[in-house]
Image (cartoon, rainbow, N blue to C red; front, side, top):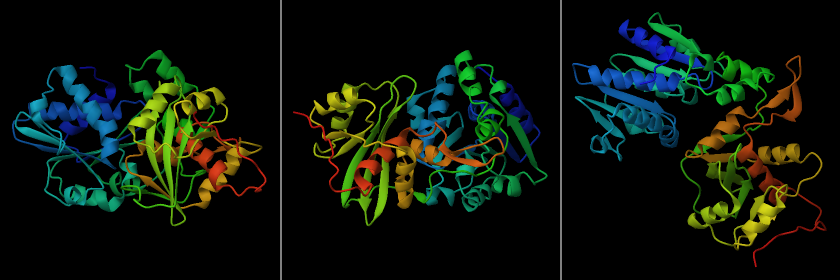
Length: 389
């Protein structure tokens, strides 16, 4: 099993019987993977039965993160056994212990039975009261981790305890990163705020957020006034983002349908078909790729190019921010973009009227819908809608 120095620091803290083991660090520092490796080690060698709970803000977040990594870790050790995995309850039996995964938005679990060990992944995304209910039901060790992009209850309520320890890590602590990954991370050195949090793993400040007025909901409304899809094309370096936007009672309800690399135009058309999207649903896509739009339209989809113009980025953002936005809990990439999409700053730290060019793939798809369908335009302006024949 590949172990980093972050794993070593965590096991030392655990053996010292530290109550609160806090991992703050940069992107790709191995903090989450290392804690999961340690929990597997603890369950494997414990002489007594243990209940280990791994918690994050939502089940989609867990599935894409901790659960995927957990399976990879066990498979690498030759331990993974489908018969020991309860896919419904997300519980794995390991020797005489169980490792359970549940989301912080599940009240019956948060207020449920006690456990021996708790691991709260990306604790910055859950509120203090939820954490407190989990903590008081934990008899032994509590692990917490996050990318510290602003100060929150972790700094005030946990790290001030005498029985806590802070493990700081950066991508430099992960010797298993490829040269390409390191180069990608270090290419962002000039973005001072981003580099402080995601490069150096130091606490940032919540400032300059571009998107406002939003919350997280469990599902889209069954009834609505309008429905549109937005597409931002990607392939090798960037993901293709497809969002489902519905207008209901003057508010926007947004769901992430796709956020993946490697999708060509025919794959996108086939994906829309598998999602059972009605063929008359208006789709607005990036006008910079007319060939892509034509190919998808040739498969019978009602797709049109985004009506860009001068300052269309800021205009689209402005329209999007006029509305209260409800994002489904499974839309983990949209949520991540909303939290990280910021205005650029000048050399003195003052915000410029230009957003950063990252964390914006799904947001671009949303902007396209705003520009075509929610912008008040002169009625004489004609729209060029491309339809499949």
